[in-house]
Length: 293
Image (cartoon, rainbow, N blue to C red; front, side, top):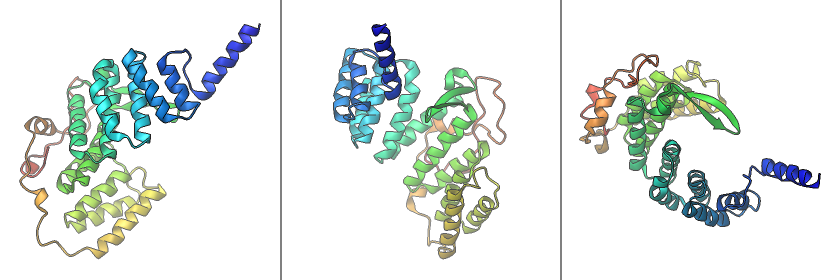
């Protein structure tokens, strides 16, 4: 009876603190992280778990997250790149997602762009989600379904944002337009308007912002999206003088032929999931000489 009660208490403790049961280095790492609130000590135990082969997939991902929280981003990147070979193939997509987030945090935009384009190639080849049209994701403890279509739009949105950080607004514009064709929303519409403003295409930007404020896009009723659209409209009124010339970084960019081949697939209408090869890419021949894909 006493043993049974003790077991129930232990099970309740693990559930309450979201700590796995056992006494290996990974369990000790999670206990140190979540119960003792000692992230530096947790990293030591995560390293021991990785080196000892104890739940390596989880140990590497959890350690990278803790390192990110401690602003040890570069170290987290190197850890993933060095030890992901020890992880299962099923954990590789989530490790890629972690790397993208880490590259974004520390401003390594070229590497972020490269990894995002790699993920688009995986989708194009029909290999995303193990060839299935949806996957189960988790956020704030809740599970939900994500479609290949939604995943593609998300990746394109992130790719557009990365191009914007490099002031490559022409490339960002094309990417955001493709994302909007797949899964439109007010946030991407605001980013697209900003790209147009940066290219002194004020009339197009204004029309785009009016569409947001008129509620055309999903999420347009969000107060933050409306406030941002209104702010961009105000900024637009103060910057209508066209620049003397296009920025140098919009001209003479090199091309990645393999990626351009994928981008030349039509995406005007999202096709149902019928075959392994998904027609997710829009014809953009007119941009061949400008885009850095």
